[in-house]
Length: 62
Image (tube, rainbow, N blue to C red; front, side):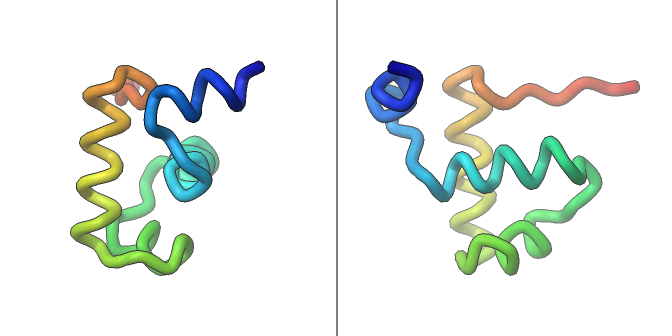
């Protein structure tokens, strides 16, 4: 059920990996995340912006 909802939002396994990395290590740079998910830094930046726009990724200062 949850995977269906994620699929309908346009979130794939790479997006999920990115969210997992950010959750575990919020201080990672886009370049470091790109290395972990085997994608380019601009691609990771684009995906992060997409996740923010969808409201599934939010930053909290603290």
